Length: 195
Image 1 (cartoon, rainbow, N blue to C red):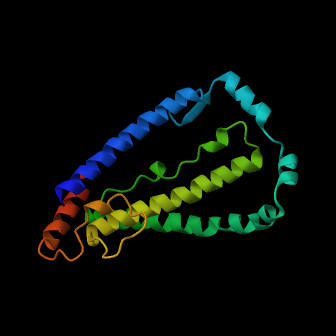
Image 2 (image 1 turned 180 degrees about the vertical axis):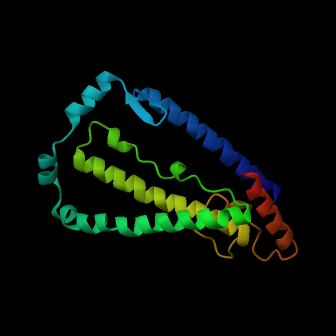
C-alpha cells in the first residue's frame, strides 16, 4: 500500500473520531443521554415532543395514496430481509471460526432505537423500526461479505466501484501479481488480529 493511501486511511480514522465527538455534542444539544441501551430525554423535551405528535388518523388522511397503496409491498420485504439475516448469521457462525475471522457483532449494525421518539405516532415508530432493521441487516451482511472478501480475494477491481466497503482500500492493487500471495497472507493475519 502506498504512503499516500496510508495517509488517507489515517485521515479517515481521524475524521471518524471527530464525527463521534460531534454526535456526542449533538446529544447535549437535543437534551438526551444514552444510558446503556436506553435513550433518555429531559422531561420538558419529552413533553414538547408529545405535543408535536400527529395522530394516526390525521397522519393517514394527510398521506399520499401512493404511500398507503405501496405500504404492503414495502412491509412484505421483511421476508427476504429476515432470510438474509438468518443466512448470513448462520454462514458466519459456521465458517468464520474455521478461517479465524472474527464474527461480526450483529448489534453494531442492526440498531432499532427511534421508536422511543415521543413525537412519532405508532405507524411512524413501526416504519422507523422496520427501516432500522432492513438497513441494519444490509450493513451487517455487507460487513460479513467484506470480511469474507478480505480473507479470500483482497484484490481491488480494475474498474472504479461506487461506495466500496471500508476494508477495500487496503486490498491489493489490480494486476499486482508479485505481491498478491504475500498480501493475502497479510490481510488474513490482519483479520485474525481483530478478534
